[in-house]
Length: 165
Image (tube, rainbow, N blue to C red; front, side, top):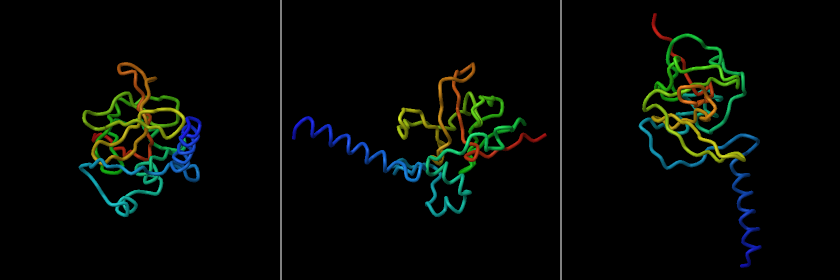
């Protein structure tokens, strides 16, 4: 095999891999070998979640910007995973990022995990629930002090629990 054939073959495989990652403009789930504390079958996840929450949490989708009521939630409380109800973020770390998604400058301790996301033409850091593995959004390094981070979360992947008065 010549170098040219090897490069052509590699580019062809890359295109196939990219095409298989997206169907109809929607991200599809990638098989995971990680096991989580909270696991359900696909049928159980579909029964538990709304179609929108399933698309985000279980298929790494993204909700439309400005579509989540949690973007304008300003009460004191906790934001939990919509899949397993693990507390993820405190309202004390929420800020208006102007992006159209609920944003936080830090998660609660031992609440989230991250992984490398290469699903589009850039490398991003995916944020997912530590307990069930549900996709929450991405973290970027353009946030406010004290961390300088912006955890840009899909509102449909979160459940808000207001602080009791």
